[in-house]
Image 1 (tube, rainbow, N blue to C red):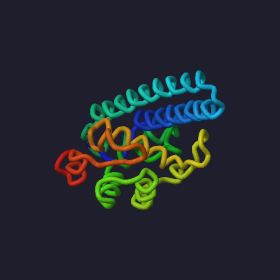
Image 2 (cartoon, rainbow, N blue to C red; image 1 turned 90 degrees about the vertical axis):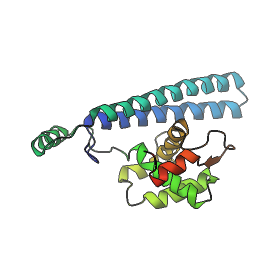
Image 3 (tube, rainbow, N blue to C red; image 1 turned 90 degrees about the horizontal axis):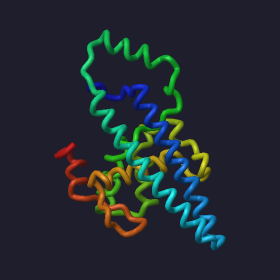
Image 4 (cartoon, one colour; image 1 turned 30 degrees about the vertical axis):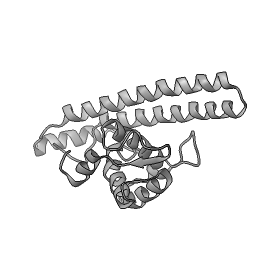
Length: 193
């Protein structure tokens, strides 16, 4: 399997996921403003729509994971050159953010350093420190839907969602708290992949 060599399909999934996440943020902001204006029908409508978008986002993330598993293929040097030439067509190469899975171990590491759980802001601050050498310039750009939020922080929060779905983080933690599970500890130590 070739590592650190994303294909155009993988890049397309990342871009699609980012756009879906931006739409979820947009709908969430509408719901929040509607709630503040006491327009509860509109707030409920936005909440339901955000729920559907989140479910769609999770399906897309699952498809990306499936693609990754079926696209992995040992290739020789000549085949690798062909793949690289195909990728250098200028499509989807620039501006692709750090992959969601890259956040898994840093999140678990940050939580372990904090004794197994931590407040979202504290965890994200530590993840940012851990991932500083890995994050790309595009990861530090603000989100169009939330200019005060950097793309990497949003991606880390979506990574947390995927980690809960995979059982690496607890799903029943108090609101605003992330908590590592036993499976997450095993994943961090390499006992499971």
